[in-house]
Each structure stands twice: as structure tokens, then as C-alpha cells.
Length: 185
Image (cartoon, rainbow, N blue to C red):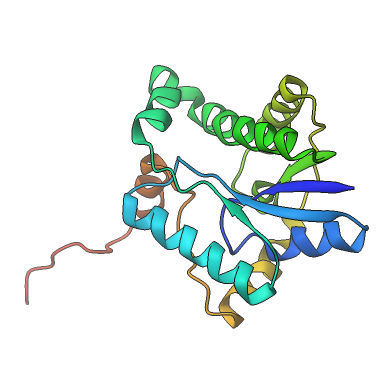
């Protein structure tokens, strides 16, 4: 069975890819993440994804479109539910691509993160799958998270510190002293 695997970043790809391949799936990783800000962060993550695809000698697909209007248009009207809208945007694009290529299902590496809202992720994946008539294959891959990080370090892959949105970046660094100016003593 052919499965399109929406890939949020190179770090999260290894475990889900291996899991799907071990169960006999033909997997096509697909990078589509208009939520990632700023532009240079987006480019770093896309580059790491492409580098990993070459290292693994597997075909990968990617959407290089950096469209702030698309992302902000999807989330700004309802900031309290911005994660849902962000998932919807990415999973709809993935389901659409899966349907175009004739895949029997699609999944997402977002399911490896202990920081994601898995109920919403599953709900939006199933919604997108129904819309494009391609089943959403939800797997709870959170148990693979730490191993993915170890593999990413071994491969010297770029490892991001937040999910991609400006709100996530602010949350990640809010209570740190990172990049703060300190008066010399």
C-alpha cells in the first residue's frame, strides 16, 4: 500500500518511516509546512528534510511555498483554536497530494511529538481524508520521539526548538534569558 507521510521536519521522519516500511508500506515523505516562521527557519527545516531524503536514498516531495498570508489567514480569525487550523491547513494539503498521486492512505509525523494535540490532529486528519477520499492513518508515534532525536543528532540534522509558529517560538523562549542583553557587572 502506498502511504503519503506528511513530514513536519527531518527530526521526526526516521521512526514513522521505519515503522510504516516495516509493515510493508511504500512511503513517500512529503514536506508541507506553511506554518513555519520566520522564512530562514522554514528554509533550514526544508533543507534538513531534503538532505535526509538524499542520505536515505529515498524519494521525497516538498512544497517550497512560503506563504505567510495563507497561514495567518487560516489561524488569525480564531487564535484560541490556532493549532486546529494549522493542522487542517497542512493535513488538507497532504490529503490532496495523496489523492493526486493515488496513495491508499496518508499519515503525519506530527504524531511523534509529545507536544502536539493528538485528539485535534486525528480529528483534522480524518476530516481531510474524508474530503479527499483518502484514509488518514493515525498512529501514536510519541514513543519514537526520543529515538528520533538521537538519530537526528547522529546524522547532524538541524533540530528546531519550537513547532514553527510565532506563538510556539514565544512560548519556547518566554522564560529563558536567551538573547537578552545583560549589563556588564
